[in-house]
Image 1: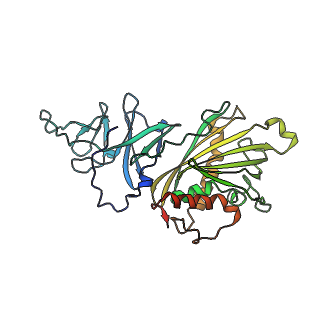
Image 2: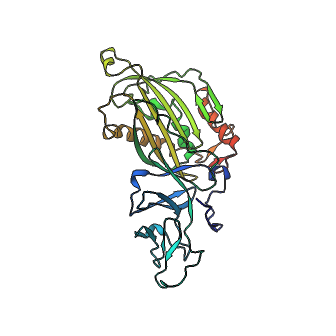
Image 3: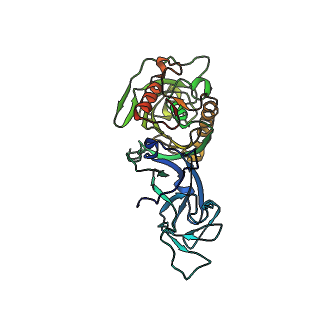
Length: 351
């Protein structure tokens, strides 16, 4: 895709000007939600966008703005594989070119009459977009190529909260007994978290395994001993690989020592204090379970996460470690904040 024409956004103060954030990829929709003939609005880093799919199946992400008089294209419609502006009926094709001006159908159309596209790509069932020039590839779902895994999706979950706060919560195992009481932990008998390691590399962060008891540890609704290995793949993309061991010998026949539950947690930063989380997950056990069987538990867990993250203050995450108190059990969160600081991120953080 060629570079989009320059768009004057100086009057919109909430737009992101952080180059690290602008040059990264973020999901803005689930692929199956974007069907030909429809226009879906989205907001990314304070910038209003539209997402649409042409008749050939290609996905497009543009600014939600008509160059003519600034109307929202999201209020328009699709006609003959073009986006129609709702104000004066100007039509834009998949190359973002204006191809029809109703009041002057026989006159040449100025070359400047274009929509404003941004780079977009589909991967792992999500539509990803970047507002800059991506410095990294889109993170791959860790279980994508693993044999025996079935892949599913959950969400979207709208957080009226900072995206970095949401990711830090995702890679934190010590909140389980309290936020997910009765599912992922027991508040009267919280797990004692031993020291664990966090390693940083060019690919992000990875923890050593953290073992916790979970009374309803997965979609089979049985007690398990779960071993979590956490990953931060990008500032707003994290994952875990969860090793699942059934603790009741009478139910051991329901699983095997190789049972795994892999999850990738992605965040669309709407702005500094609003986020949309989308989840890609996979299991290699319980082949009879469907996505519909698993979504109720996913919805409970992520809505509980959202409810607690929305209470956190300050809303933007502090990357100065002196701003909040930390415990040795917060090692992954501390490493995450240091990583954000060292990346030079300024949007959505308090330095």
